[in-house]
Image 1 (cartoon, rainbow, N blue to C red):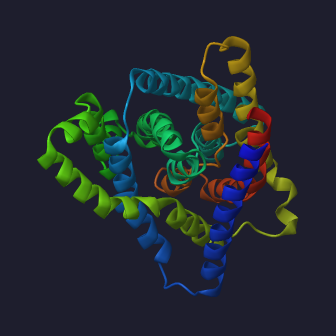
Image 2: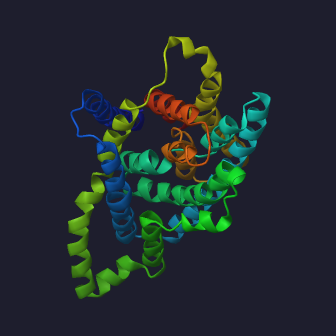
Length: 325
């Protein structure tokens, strides 16, 4: 119970920052396009710094690597099951092509990089952050391959274009981090004092920058939500696909996977299950919304999905944690 209280407390802190960003956006307190600048600052600087400082500073054991590979495999399996479910539901709901592709991508992909990774690091410490990274890696691979294919198949998007999108600051940071893991960087830094001195200098320089990622992210989320228009009361009933999607995304699929893991995965470490389930419980991916306009998706539908799922996460995530912890 104490752990759940701590989790709720952390989420409330982050929620306050999100509300602050929302108020700043609505009142015009921040300059125009602040959300764009903040997004690039997070994606191109603080998140790569977070990845590198974490992977360079973590003492990886055989158990960590086994758990990490297992998380990645479970992530791929869960996302493909979500995709299959979304294909069936989009047909059942008779969604048009533009709305259907967004429905499929949002049910499969979540905001695991912007919110999930830093949030789990904030709640569970360095171990939570490292384990969350093992989920984010296959998630991003699927986003820029399967995701782009589904979104852009009507426009002839090729595999080569999808693969080009994989090369960015975060994937480069993951690649360097993988090298750190393979060479056991922490052991080398302890054995060779000059290397250790350089590492400590760089770590002291970039760790404070990395540590603000989660707080900047919540401000960015608030700023983004402040610019989203979701219509009026008259639109309540036409949004039923969004309601179904958000319920499945935040509650149905995470709890369904949790039950499956308990029935068929009794041998799996409980912390591994926790990371997978919580990453699945993250709100709809903002990046899918950003890409929807480029690939003729229903941007309005995508925007509503992000808006409602992000707001409701403040309530659903503590509930999911109460159930699984």
